[in-house]
Image (cartoon, rainbow, N blue to C red; front, side, top):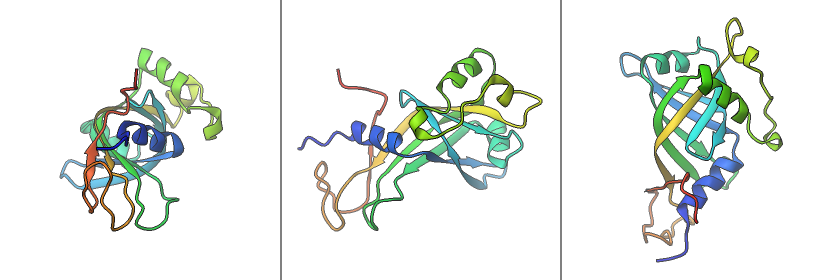
Length: 168
C-alpha cells in the first residue's frame, strides 16, 4: 500500500479545472455530451448555467440521470488525469435557486461571472442547474507504462472515490 489519497486527487482535479463535460441521453438513448463551466459545492454538487433550450437541458428535463467527466487537458500525452461523476440533475427553483446563486460561479479566481436571480429566471434566456453526485471515480494516477502505486495495475483503470468526504 501507499499514501496515495485518491479523494484528495479528485478534489484537486475539480479545483484546478473550469469545465465539466455533461453526458446526457435523448428519448431514443442517443448520447449527447456538452462542456460547461462549473462550480462545486463541497464536491458533492456541480452547478452550471445553460439555456433550457439546449439539447442537454432538454435531455435532463426528461431524464435527469447524467454522467460527467472533469479532466486535465494540460498534462502530457499518456498522463491522463480525470474524475468521473454520475448522478441526477435539474434546473433550480425556489430555495434551491437561492442557494445555487450563492455558490455559482465559484471563487473569483476561477473567472466566472457573478449572476443575479434575474439572470437565471424567466424571461432571461439562462437557468441555473445542479447535479447531485451519487458516484465518483478517478483515473488512477500513474506514469505511462508503469503500475499505479495503489493497485499495482499497469493499465488505465478507475478507482472509486468520495471527494466530498474530507479527512478529520
